[in-house]
Length: 97
Image (cartoon, rainbow, N blue to C red; front, side, top):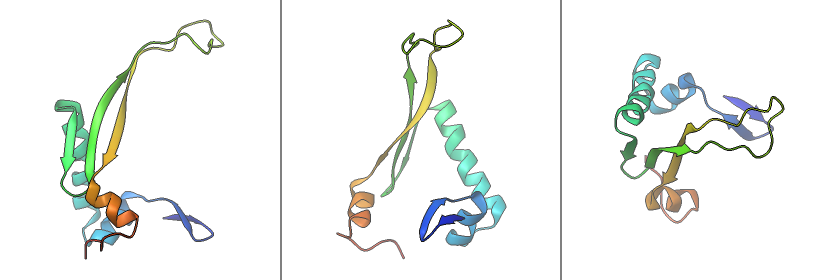
């Protein structure tokens, strides 16, 4: 876990495993299952957490790239948090224990 002052800048798989009481291998398998679900189905719903989905960004030629070639179409992962997660983040509901 990297911190700048008291702000956590990112979590590693090991950090997630420790926080969830899992082994590194269990946490790694869980995260890989999310990626596999996105590759195979295009959406992953985690109850009371949110939804991951794959979106395709079309090819674009603006801003003009330095090499003169257009930016190719690409897939990106989008996340929409659930109402429950939003309520927890905004202090309107107790978090999971």
